[in-house]
Image 1 (spheres, rainbow, N blue to C red):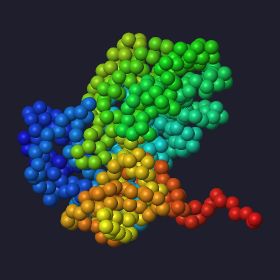
Image 2 (image 1 turned 30 degrees about the vertical axis):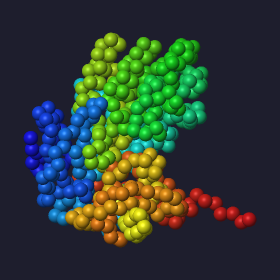
Image 3 (image 1 turned 180 degrees about the vertical axis):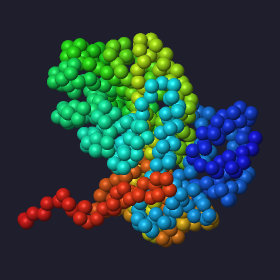
Image 4 (image 1 turned 90 degrees about the vertical axis):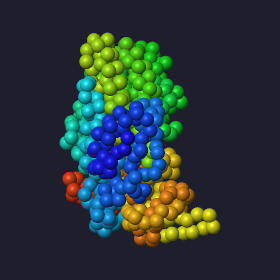
Amino acid sequence: MFFTAESFAASYILQRVYFSCFRRARKKGPLRFLHFNSCGGYNNQQAALSPNLISCSRYGGYFCALQLPAMLQLQNGQYEIGGVPVQQLCEKYDTPLYVYNTATMEAQYNKLKNAFSGANTKIKFACKALNNINVLKFFRTIGAGLDTVSIQEVWTGLRAGFKPEDIIYTPNCVSMEEIELAVKEGVQINIDNISILEQFGHKYGSSIPVCVRINPHVMAGGNINISTGHIDSKFGISIYQMRHVERIIKAEKIRVNGLHMHTGSDILDVDVFLRAADILFEVTEHFPDLEFIDFGSGFKVPYKPDDYYTDIDEVGAKLTESFNNFCKKYGRDLALYFEPGKFLVSQSGTFLVKVNVIKQTTATVFVGVDSGMNHLIRPMFYNSYHHITNVSNPTGTQRIYTIVGYICETDTFGWDRKLSEVGEGDILAFHNAGAYGFSMASNYNSRFRPAEVLVHKGKDYLIRKRETMEDLLRNQVEVEL
């Protein structure tokens, strides 16, 4: 079976249609498919038939992603983000620059809502992934709630217009004083350790409902630093401590209205997620007054060509069926919560940098850019892959480069990457930069944090100014010694 260029080139939103065809077609054997330009964006004008025959097999509930989503679109020889030329954005706002596209955020949100439409589903954006208040406001307007992990995120969410009842507060290792601040704001409290649960019961008894975060002892996630449901994780209360929890709840008359778990991010096996859900269902026998069950998130998005990603439709069908069956046994319908962060915003973001130098050694050609681990730490911290496109030279000859930053550390963004020939002054685009990019940025080496821009319905809006020396020194106090 052959797919035409039009099947691929429309937009990211049409991928659902494509993968529906793909699922049916794969039953008939290997597929031939069209490759798009290896610069990383869809090219309506230059799509050419790949000489390769590719057979993509299912793996643990995932499908191979044949091409990255169209975070960049190549139109008339220049790259665009949401209809706005990348070069224009760089000239207007300078580099380095984070750019987010609301169309992709909304598409991801709707994809998740549709996948779980068979249940009373509520999606709460995990704002630690991207905490700009304008992004929070956008998610509020399309119907999302908010997942927070600090009192500061709670305050930001309230300022963004979220109702307290639409915010869940899930901290770990914080003081009782911080939890009391969250209680005063009227948000849903989620407790993940026995000590705080007991203190909470002493103070509030049954007057304030609380959610309990369970650790199901399931190892899941793409990296040990983002796996949170295993036995050695600091997150949640062990399922083996349920008898202790039950005693505290009974003694303090605590009203538990929700159960929560989050096994990790970039889960590579849907069945692992479903097994953890079954464990959580079993735990509910200790909690007769539940109003919701919160499954966290962890849905994987593709970061590179031929990457795996979560088949949300499959997860939605299986988990919805399991959840509805559980509700029948429990005796009433509960709400089904999810707290996606990366899934909603990762593919919406592009990080734009300028090439400062091309440095050739005896073994490597380095591309040094005007950014580093101070702006995008994920490749160094998680060993994560971010696809890179040379937007200044869409049709150039492919060459091998190692892309590095300007920080006085080994801040390598990518080893031995094939890019269109790079020159000093070129603009490079890092894909999948919407999640845990700016929110993990720092002023290391006394560098300024970059500006942020939101593209909405074909228009670009500055949503965070680039920092200045005044910002860097604002809270420092000079003293005479």
